[in-house]
Length: 302
Length: 309
Image (tube, rainbow over all chains, first blue to last red; front, side, top):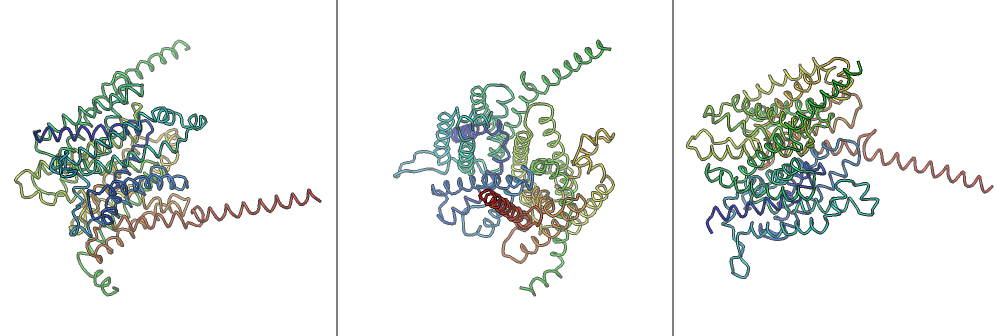
């Protein structure tokens, strides 16, 4: 398998794994919480690394995921005090966790194989060289295998709890009345977001993960009103964005994850302007037409 | 320890850096109060990330690290991003926070693409350009501090001049509009001030953490007063003190980056204000809740006993 095919494959798997929970983040309007998570899992990664001394340990994955869940809890606890706005609570929690992580990394950067650039920016170009071997047999690039497992977990969660996710996303009060726990589903979703962010950090870095999550979901949201179609479209766009992104990055010899984020932004912008359902052009025309009808009515009254 | 601190305060480099970060903290405290009260504080986060491609393009255009040009590029791309976020969230059904995260990551991605492209070019001038991502306060020069001071004083003057308008639109924009003030003008002015503040902070605190400086001081100050003028002044002071003490800690300690160290100091202010504020604080609220509960229980008890008799 050539390097570019392998990188494309990894990028596609990462993108789909991110896009699945992303659909629900977009619908719930909690994408900035996921942005906070992608920053704070860094602290989990660093602390877990100090304990295990091994960047490949599965404990790292679990510890960092727990930090993500803890972040969600901390943000909610602050929001419940009503002493500060919901957005300010996010803006208070993640810079603190992130700063502690950066201080730890810089202080001990000589001793450990973990520097801030790789963690933040990631580098897909190196992903094929980090192999995963089980009993001496090479079973593929580590990022590919990890993200494939995470993708399966995400798919399983969405498929199993589709009904619960749907009802808690669109009408939390109704869901609670039916006996579903919106909080439980919310935390389940956020655990997946954390897990995905941790899994993706070494290939795409912790800042761009949020784009991988929100972009395809938002593009799909602009094009349809149906949840099932939205999920399908999000997956399609995740694939398209990463394939085009990898090609362009190779052509220009630049950051691959960065290029995928740019392509994601561009496809979303195109959908935003031209979508026949919710696009900018469509909504401007509708507004103008309604204004005219209203004006005519007013005139008739006069 | 004390000798070390005293020696540090007479150190020229430290004086410059501390002055710069202190003034930066003051400025972002003042400007941040308005955005935080308007519940648009995360806009700063998106803005600072979106400044990265502007810095890269600025460098590509002139092929040298002329600070003014880089900051100008940052300002243009930051304002473009703000415009895009407002366009997406106001004209269609896209939610504000979805627009925010999408624009943030796409612009940051573009920034990375341009940075990696520049790194591949043979121009030796490019070294140190990626300092903007994490900030490098120790690289501050006297002219940077002068720039912060000049722009800062202009911003503070503008805040004083348009105090009434800012106050009006922070708390009741509909009322402001019926009074005949232009909302668009006030919003533009505030966005421009936020962009300028963030850009001044990019070099020392970096793209990722500079938004924390906007939110933290305002949240801390808000817990101590209900009056806007006092909150603004307190936020300025909190920002100033955090800037200087963060710089101090990072200079004394071994290998502690300045930006994160400022944020940690600031967070201590925020958390202690949230807990210990005498009127609104978490502890004060809890104890007043307990007191109330006790009086009600006593009254109930008295009522019951009265009935039995």
